[in-house]
Amino acid sequence: MRVLVLGAGGIGGYFGARLIESGNDVEFLVRPPRAAVLAQTGLRLYSNVGDFERAVATFTSIQPGAYYDLVLLSCKAYDLDSAVASIAPAVADDTRVLPLLNGVRHLDGLDAAFGASRVLGGVCHISVTLQDDGAIRQFGLLQRLAFGSRDATPLPEVVREGLIGIGKHVVESGTILTAMWEKFAFIATLAGLTCVMRGAVGEIVATPEGADLARTLYAECRETARRCGHVLSVDAVVDAERILIAPDSPLKASMLISSAERARNANISWVICVPEHPRTRWIHLCSRRRLRIFGCTSVHGRMPIPAGSPLSALSIIYMFYCLRQCETCDKCTMSGLADLRYAWSSRLGSACRGQQTWSLHVA
Image (cartoon, rainbow, N blue to C red):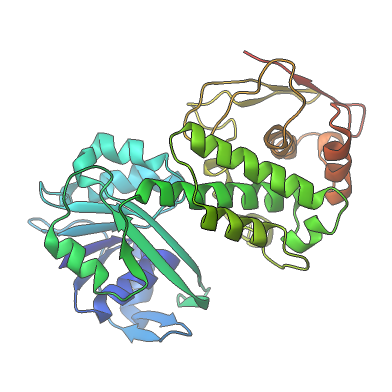
């Protein structure tokens, strides 16, 4: 199988390496700085399930006449538009695109660009990072990847066999969209909790209201999935809740590490909805003194707040995130777990310091 991998970071580099190991012809489409590193050091992967270090084929643009059976898309959601433009010359009539992005919203853009029949569903579970020296490091043993057609369109056999040939941890799923929603609901809960509270799961559940907030937020995310037509499996729910309320757990969203510890562009806006995205009016920070929450129809992971309802876990998470974005006034920025615990336990709209107020409005 001929494969084009967009990006050679943590996800793309890891599964690109495993595709090479299983005998596939793999090329990487990367930015010039990454291409220079790979030319000098090769692709290096350090993993408890087997290291990888080889020279690999890289390009900074699609070569004329290039043909691929599969394009593996491993960019961040905020780079999706440029990624689509970059891979477009490589997508032929019988090429399949396998996105490994979190969430589900990216499917709309890919379908519009390439047609739904060419775009597979995909989800991976792995802890991996790109180190400062350009090497990729995997943590733990988890390395699951699921893929599948989103409708009745059969997969080309070369694509199916090429992916399954990576190993038993790669599976074809007949319910791939539900699998994507299972991960989406989990990471939306994890990201909302740990990014906004700026703490690990163990720190959050150690507070009197922490475990209750985690369960309630996850329940709302599951309900969002159900309203979008995807009931999460019992096994997925049990596993997620066990992880989200584990005492003393050091787990926190990778985007929290990215934004707080590395000062890089983070993925939070694409996992928990925030106002920068033009398709939503779910949250809007009207001024430094008032935050308005607007209900809206469900669009991939958003739920309306019924008139007269108390503040939900989702709305509290969203409010705190928006308040953190006001860089010109430190009085309306919450300061950690204690303040969020108070806001959750009181369910009131006046917990913000400096006599700020929150208003709940339903459109």
